[in-house]
Image (cartoon, rainbow, N blue to C red):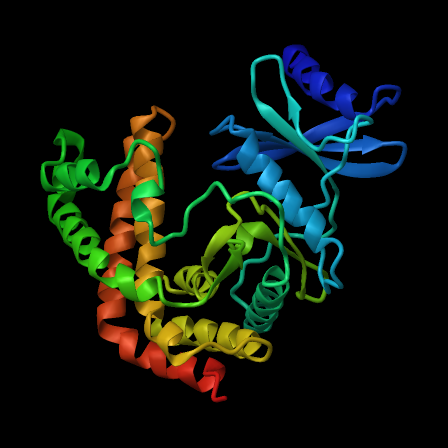
Length: 342
């Protein structure tokens, strides 16, 4: 414990050279470790990036956040804190990257309540509109979702397709599912020319219940974790959120109630083209394939166990099955709420 605190102190002294602080655990996510920090009655969140050491990625994220802070947002976002030298990025002695952010009040929602989902949809639409206004003098490091070969450096499409068609022993029970995924990856390539023609802008890229906070009234009060912000399809932000609403195995009425609530909030502030809406089912499945590739790469890196990858294999296939049955209904619902009729 003392060794761990010394590690935390090594980072915090860069931000508060003369200050004393109190810290407590904030948990460890899939991609980073967090600690809560209190300094002279002010609270902060310390974030240590665990899965990469690429400063360009972090600096781009911080630049977007600082640009957004200049706009009249109606919800909170992380505010990077600067060191006395004017930098928001700190390197530890062992090479890890850390950043400090001002604390934001709220709790993670369950997103089971339609009112919460309407608020989430409204916030997603508002964030999309504000991100369209942001420009930073740095090229994004992350590539668009549809460039799926860039999801993880270990996961070339050829290597992943070979894995899916000839799975190792620990994945034998999922051979049929992996074969299906390999076919989806191959077929998806045919959609890329159409996707490239759709409107592009900055997107958060990972909006879900763990990356938003709600207040006591259940309204979204803050959006967190802009680590994957990049220039991508405008409609991809919506597809990522809808992918989280669709949980095959859950009662169908509940799934559609969630989708309807989210779309009513989103559609109240954002309109999309017919071409964008037509691609939503494909992009929802792209989100699940992307998550599968992300965790497969982490497994090959020795970070995640077999069971984690197996979980995302099943999720990708089950959502694909659901979309095969329900995509026409989903597109019509999106048209009703979001079609730009100008």
